Image (tube, rainbow, N blue to C red; front, side, top):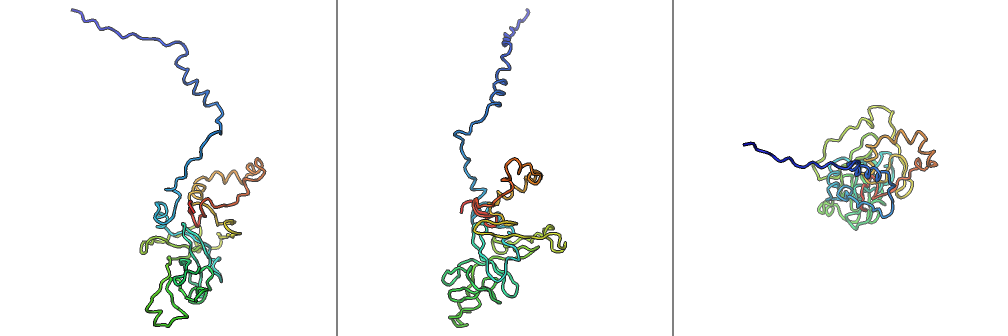
Length: 262
């Protein structure tokens, strides 16, 4: 007996039907995209926020962070904002550098207005003197026995200098990594690299000071092609020079403050 298998019917498509959808796709690609109704993406706070306890904040606090140039520390202390924290940085008369919490442990007066002395920085309100490690070594209105018994310490961060920059470590005590010896600012290379920067007023600055979130700074580093375009003059010609007149502004505080939410 012969077994017969029924073959399924084959339906032929109409000419041109198979390319209808790709053609419509090509037509949509050629259409102008309207700006009407477009929405701004929500900020990625998990990536840009760097206050204490935030994911990126804790990550960046495990590295040495530049806070200012060495030649910026002269006769007056400097108040800087780094990773959403205010820090008073100073160099005492012996050349040692300290980075302290700005509010005096006594009455909360800002050490930004303190007086730099040989032993450290003296609060302008009641004259408490703190060394670069944060220890109170003089209380003019108290006896030496009382000062020793109180054993007051101003919160401070470890500091190191290298290549004309001042670095601070803001992570947990005792977890400081070995300081990376960046060859680009290696002082042993001679005078082929000179670091210069100047703060104009508020958040406006020129030179190496960049007022932006850390992510803004970093994504610009990994995009080197603009270095070829901007100096060529093509960008300046097409936009009357506005591309070359960049004014750093805070999109969440500066690179030295690096915070997207304050």
